[in-house]
Length: 410
Image (tube, rainbow, N blue to C red):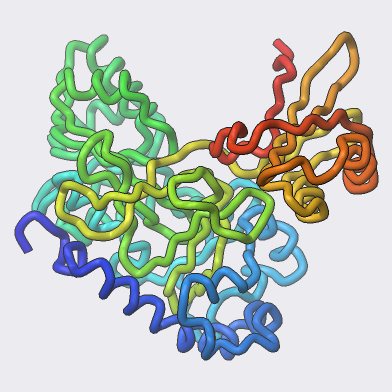
C-alpha cells in the first residue's frame, strides 16, 4: 500500500482496539496452557472475562527487572516461552537477561519502522548494532530484510573498516545507535570522505534535536525506533518530533511507577506491553521505561496510538541513609492514607546527612496530620522522613516518584 508498510497501519482505530481485546481470552488461555510461568501466574483467573482494558489492568505485571531472578530459578527463560515453540537462538544481554528468537520472517516486527524511515526494496543497509550475544543486530537485520533491503552486518566499532565498507558498497541506509552514526560522520569528515547514507533508523539511545540537525546537515534523514530485546518493536517515528506510533499487535498501557494501575491520559508512567506472540507471550510486561500517551492521532495517517518517546527510567529506587527506598513502598503508603492522590519523595543532602522529604498531595482536604503520615512512613520505609502536604494538583504528572537531588560525586 503506497505510503504504508501494510493496510493495517491505517485501519479504523476502534476496530483495531476491539480486535486486539477480543483476542485476549484465547491468548491468555493459550499462554496458561503452554507456559509454566503463566500457568502459575494465571491460576484461578477467569480468562474468558478479560475482554477490556479495565479487565486487563486487574492482571499482575511482570517487570523486566524481575527477569534476572526469575530466570535463575528456572533457566533459561523462566518458563515464559511456549513449551512447543521452536526456538532458534538464545541471547544473553547485559543483566544478564536471556532472550529468545524464532527464526521466522520479521519475528520482531521491525519492518514497518524501516519502511516509515524510507527504506525500500533493494536498498543496502549498514547495520551497526551488535550481533554478539545481544539480539539488537538481529532485530534490525530482520526488519530491514522485511522491507526487501540488503543488509551489511557490520556491527559496532572498527571505524576505519566501517568507512571502507561504506566507500566500497555505498549503502543508502544506516541502522544502529545515533551516537555511532555521529562517530562515523566525524571520522569520515577527518578522512575527507562523504558517507553514502541518505537515511537512518536509530535506536537504543536518545536522539537530541541538535544531533538530528547535524545528521540533516550531512544529508541524512534520521528517524527513531523504540524496541526492546524482549518484545521487539514497540513504537516508531514516522515524522521527526511528532511522537512515536505504536506497533501493530500490541496492547500498550502507561502505569504509575511502582504500581500496576494505568495513569490518566497524557500522564507520564511506565510503559507496559502485552505482546500477542505465541512463541514468547508477554502479558503486561513492564519495560522499565517512562513515556506518556499522545491523545491525537498521527498526522501521517497511521491510526494507532502514539507515545511521546523515552522520558526516563521507571526504576527510581535509591538508597537513603543506607536503606533502599522503592516506588512501590511509596505507593503502599499512599494507599494507606485515604484521600492522598499522589506522593513524591525528595532526597537531598544537608551537611553530611541524607534528608528525605515526602510531598503528599490530597484529593481535597488534608486527610491526616503530617506527623501521623510520618509515623506510617517510618513503618513502611524503615527510616524517618519529613512530611509536607502540598496543594491539590501541584505535583507534576511527570512519572517521577523519587527525585534524588543529591550531588553526583565527581
